[in-house]
Image 1 (cartoon, rainbow, N blue to C red):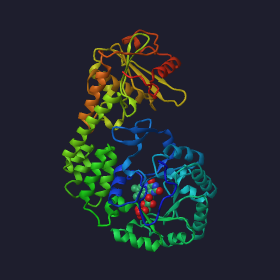
Image 2: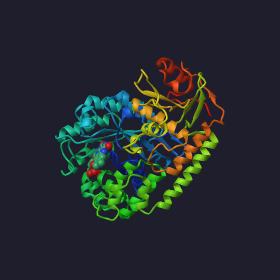
Image 3: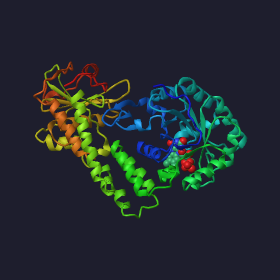
Amino acid sequence: MAKPTKIDYENKLILAPMVRINSLPTRLLSLDYGADLVYSEEIIDHKILAAQRIENKLLGTVDYEMPDGTIIFRTCPKEEGKVVFQMGTADAERALKAAKKLEKDVLAIDVNMGCPQLFSLKGGMGAALLTQPEKIKNILTTLVNGLNIPVSCKIRILPELSDTLELVKLIERTGVCAIGVHGRTIDERPRHPNQNNVIKAITQTVNIPVIANGGSKEILCYNDIESFKQETNTKCVMLARAAQWNPSIFRKDGLLPLEDVIKQHIKYAVEYDINAMNTKYCLLQIMHNSMDMAEGQPMLDSKHLSEMCDIWKLEEFYKTIQRMRIKKRERLMDDENIYNNKIIAKRMKTEDGSILIQLPVRFIKSNYPGNISPKQLLHTKYMKKHTKAPPYNTVQRDSDKCFKSVLCFDGKKYTTPYWEKSKQLAEQGAAITCLISLGVHDGRINNNETEDEDLRSKWREMISDNNSVQKSTETSSKPAGESCNAQIDKKEYTETSNQIGINGEDSDVKT
Ligand SMILES: Cc1cc2nc3c(=O)[nH]c(=O)nc-3n(C[C@H](O)[C@H](O)[C@H](O)COP(=O)(O)O)c2cc1C
């Protein structure tokens, strides 16, 4: 379906971009309560380019996943046509490349020109752009001309009114569809009054829609939004902090009790498998003035979505979603033998006759207790009878300096499909593959124990000795078994790894 090239900004209420807050649950809740459009948090162009776009069949989402497994942006059909992606950038061509990647998943691209944080300013992004008219012109015109979706930007005002008006005129000439204006200068903090009169002057200077922002301190209920519109002479308002504290601020019929909002947020977090720490952060913002309620301390102590569900009496909801997910996962596996477009488990025979097992697992530090890692667990508990340290064969790829490791244990080799940023991560991944293959727990602490165990037993089934093996062309100069801790020639390893599909790009080999 062709994407709209214009956005109707007439009387629109918008969720303003907020780092860490604007994850999928906050955006969906805001839409449920009455927001017309929702912004993502600012994500920089480099990250988008480094991320892999994955159609997540299990959750029904589109994910942008970093090489370390972190999801930087997850969107779903419920927000289709309503989500504006905010990008941090200092370079027109890079911005366009990143935006092109996102084009089919978002309604519009917004360029952040207001962030006063040091990391933004240092990188020439955010508010650093405000004083670089040529760069602004270049970035915005490149995006406007190169994209098939609308482009907007969000600015802060400059200390002098005349400079601000010159700036917005320049921005208008680039062809953007709207300008979001936070009525404070870079040096002003949230406690300073928002300069609504400057926003009003902007509306009298340009003909494109102006989205008024910065009024949250005075917006305590829905009706206050109308006053903000009148003071700024705008038809469109963007709220950040008011929505961070209670997204039902968008509700015509008035604010909902915090408990209702929190429960809805948790439900979306469970439904879309959102990172527990991010969820906790958002919920603590909602609870910020009410930490003395009974749920306050348990929330501070919670680490997993299942615990948050217990605290808010959503245990049944949690179990139901997990059960449904297990069933769906089974269906997906049975249908396609794949999970999330990735081959889920591989058992291959190397040229030296040894078996190579590959599982799509990664070591994500927060998922494991601080005191014992999968490598330590494997070494201390399961390798007792072996005198030598686990034989990891770890190589570094020249192109991006990333690492891959193959662990040899009891005559079999274990690895993952991923090239990792550090040697340690690569070896932990190989150790996790080994532990799971051996049928023992890898020490992971997580939300979805049942679900995880289910997936792992499916993997074990797929790689079991009874299943036929795929012939791999990996070569090793030494026979299989303990002695396979011999150094594999790096070049040969990389080439042969590519052939057997362990370079991160899964081959279509099915076990
Ligand atoms: C937690 C938080 C994170 C924010 N992150 C972003 C961001 O990613 N991009 C951006 O342009 N502004 C960001 N802002 C600024 C807001 O979008 C908004 O301009 C500012 O809070 C003023 O609006 P308000 O009065 O409605 O809060 C953030 C603000 C907060 C409170």
